[in-house]
Amino acid sequence: MKHDPFAPGFGSSFYDYLAATRPELLPAATSLPPGAGPPQVPHGTTVLALRFGDGVVVAGDRMASDGYQVSSRRIDKVIPTDAYSAMAISGAVGPCLEMAKLFATELEFYEKIEGRTLSLSGKANKLGQMVRGNLPLALQGLAVIPLFAGYDLERRTGRVFKYDVAGGRTEETDYVAAGSGSGQARGALKKRFRDGMDEEASVRMALEALKDAADEDLGTGGADPVRGIYPTVLVITAEGTREVPENQVSALHQALGASEE
Amino acid sequence: MAMPYYVSPEQLMRDKAEFAKKGVGRARAIVAIRAEEGILLVAHNPGASLNKLSEVYDRIGFAGAGQYSEFEALRKSGVRHADLTGYAYSREDVTARGLANGYSQMLGQIFAHEMKPMEVELLVAQVGPDTAADEIYRISFDGSIAAEGQFAVVGGDADRVTASLDRHVTGVAGLAASLALCKQALEDGGNGTLSAADLEVALIDRSAKGRAFRRLGTPRVEALLAG
Image (tube, rainbow over all chains, first blue to last red; front, side):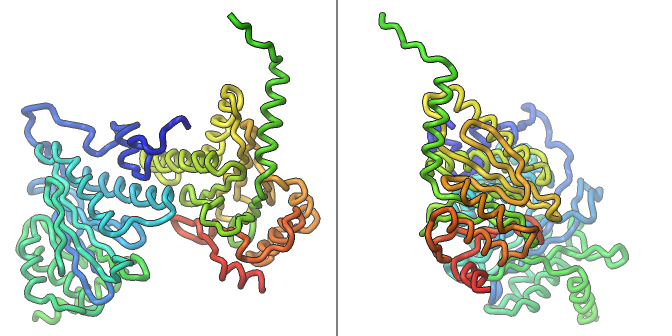
């Protein structure tokens, strides 16, 4: 109660509050002993986001790999962070998921303390600072390289952002991809992206790009109809965030296969 | 060296309590009531750009009567506590009981040890899967805490508002009926005739997944009151 409301850590940022009072809970709190090699941990692979007429589509494969081993076939790498934004992760799975959780808490906390939501630019900027905070761990092999996408309620458009390991933030006009299969995914998106597509066409395009990535990249998991595992696809528009149901994704996926033969 | 005057502890506590009561007594009343759709919070707060009702966590709401600066600081520390608990453990580990206990400790400490007690009275409410599982806690300036039943009232005219609700509330009602009862009770508390614009209304929505706190704007309140 005696805290100065403007003192560091007692404003509207949960991240700052954690850093000021419970730094051991920050994702980057643990550092590896000097000289230690990068630890063997699961890594997530291909995620992407693209803009369409009404907003953005964010999608990711479901694979987490540990070197040449499959670590998990069904993790979700696309995580809604509030009603109008989502983060897609590539890099070391543990720190990535931890950062996504922290970022979602950050946005909710700001909203509750201030009584209004952060602007989309404000959210994207904050995520950049959090990625930069992880740099010491990234240099030791535990990189967090997220994508960020959302619907900008002021500009009335979808926007997509990518980050480098040092927290550098780049906004792209049309699409972004990250992870080991991102080269193939970007190639697919580059050839087919059109301005003002409808939702179905853009979801199909996202699935196609992920399929290309899975075809060419060992680390990216393709759709697995036998086990019923399909990419995670999120659509964010002025109405909010919603996940495309699995049966719809599987139907679109089947149609993709058929059109190729 | 000047000797401090002796004041008996009883006298000291009485004076502090009287001071705090006077402060809270100047505040307009706030009602929390269990309804079918969730827990309804209604405050007499014209304009309402400075909120008296707010969200703490998924299924937990907060209402503060008294000094704005004081209950606002308490609200923020509640949000910090809730978000920290939810982040360090899991979302379902954040409970109204824990939060209300924390407030009770904090207010009790301040009442006992600080020169000036806080001039506030708080409500912490958590909606459950059914009305029987709803929880409403009332915490006073001295840290005393009570788990309330069907409804709870804080603020200046609490006695008269409570009396009105006692007379009219028969059981758990729907949203519109509950809102009408609360408005009636606030009017009976001596606020004169109230319009939708005089009320700040929020619902902790029983059917919601995740964050359940919803503000009901003036048009919605008007429509509900019109039946």
